[in-house]
Amino acid sequence: MVAVVDKPTFPLPSCLGHNPRVAVVGLGRTGVSVVRFLHRLGVECLVTDSRLHPPGLGEIRGLEGVSVFTGELRADVLRWATHVLVSPGMSLAQAEIRSALERGVALISDVDLFAEMAQAPIIAVTGSNGKSTVTCLVAEMADQAGLKVRAGGNLGTPVLDLLDPECEMYVLELSSFQLERTRKLRPDVGILLNISPDHLDRHPDLTSYAAIKSRLLQWSYWKVANLDDPLVRQMTESCGERPVQLYQGGLGKTSGEDQWSSASVLWFSVEDPRADYSLVCWQNEEWLARRGEPLLAAREVALSGRHNLANALAALAVAEAGGIALEPGLRALRTFSGLPHRMQRVATIDGVTWINDSKGTNVGATVAAISGLKGPVILLAGGVGKGADFTCLRKAVAGKVKQAILFGEDRHHLAEALQPVTETVLVEDLKGAMEVARQSSRPGDTVLLSPACASLDQFDNYQARGNHFESLVRQWQSVE
Image (cartoon, rainbow, N blue to C red; front, top):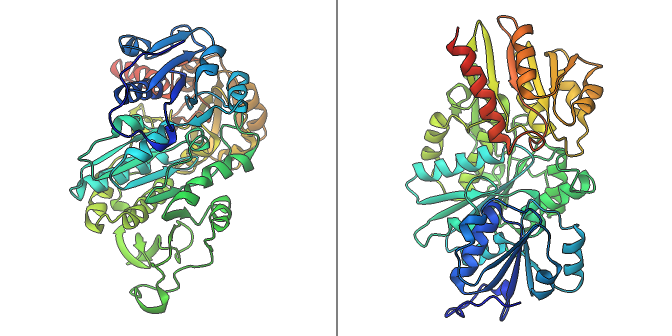
C-alpha cells in the first residue's frame, strides 16, 4: 500500500520526523484540512473513515496520491502508518486506534502541525462554556486594534486553514478532544474559562476532563483564569500559580505594592473585586474594572446576561496579556453583540419572547442561560446528554422555570432530574416541544431553547437545531 506523492523540498514539522506516513482517521472539516496540508507538504497520506460517505469526501478525492478507504477503519492503513492523526470527533479508546498506538504509531494532531508552522503570537481559549464568545470577542478586540487576526479551531475554520504568513495574531478555540491529542502547542496566552461536566461519555470522569483542560495553562506563557470557578482555581494552583495572589487596592490604586501585574497569571471574576479584572460599584452602578479602576459601565456591554460580563472580563484580561490596547478592547465590548445560536432573541410574539440558545450543549451552558434571564421561563431541552448529571440544573430551574418541555434521546433522564423542581412535559422532537410551548406560554414568558445536550440524535449539529427553531418561530410570527 503506497501513496505516491512528490517528496518535500523544505523541512517538515518536527512532530512528523523523517519519511513520515500519516494515516488520517476521520474526515469532516478537520480531516479535509489535514489532508490538504499534508498533500501540499508532499507527505505520504492515506485516509480511513468508518462512515461510508463521510463529509468532505468529495473535496479530497481529486488529490493525486491520496487514497481514501471508507465504511470501516482499515487496520492495514493503520499498520502502514508511522503517524496517526485522529479527528477530534473520534475517541482514542476505539479498538483499532488503541491497537495502533500500542504498536508505537505516533499520535499527532492538526494543532501540533499548526503550532510548528505558525509565525505569529497564539492566544488559545478553552473551558466548558463561553469559548466561542471569548474567542470571537478577543479577535474583534485585535481587529479593532488594527491587527491582522485569524480566529478558528473548534470554532469555525480548522487551525491549519488559518495559517497565513501575514497574520499578526491567531486566536484559537480548543476543545478537550483537541487538547488530549496535542503536545507541541505553546501559546503566548492561554485561558481556562470554567469547568463543568461535559463529554463524560468520552472522558472517564470530571477530574480527567478537568485535567485535560488544564493542560492549556501548563503550556501557556501567560495564563488567564476564572477566580470564581473552584476547579479552575485548583488547576491553576497545580500549574504553580497561587490563587491567593490578588490585587489588594481600591479604586484609584494602580501602582506600588498593591499591584501584581508582573505575575504570569491574570484573574477575572464577577464575584471578587480583588481580581485583576472584576466588577465594581462606582457612581451607583456596576462597572467592569481593571485592578480596581472602572473601565466601562456594565450597561454599555453589548452582550446580555451576567455570564457574558464574565466573558467580557475574561476577554479584557486576555487582551492585556496579548498586548492588545485597552481602548480598542472597550470599543469591541460596546459593539460585539454575540454569536448565532447563543442567547439570540428571535422574536416576541403576543408578549412571549423566544430565545435560541441551541449552542447550550451542556448543563453548565444551560445553567448560565437560565440564570441570565428573568422569569418566568419555559425551557426546551433534550438531545444526547453525553453522560451528564442533569440534577445540576435543579438550582437554576427552581423558582424560575415554570415548565420544562423535554425532547430527544435523553428526555427521560432530564425529566427524572427536573420533576422535583418544575413541571415537565415529554415530547418526541423539538417541533413538538415548541408547539406545546406555544400553547402553554403567556404574555411575559420567555421560551428558551437551551438543550443542555448535543443535537446528533435528531440534527446534524447545533446550528441545524437552532435554525429549525428560528424557522418555526418566524413562521408563527409571519401569520400573527
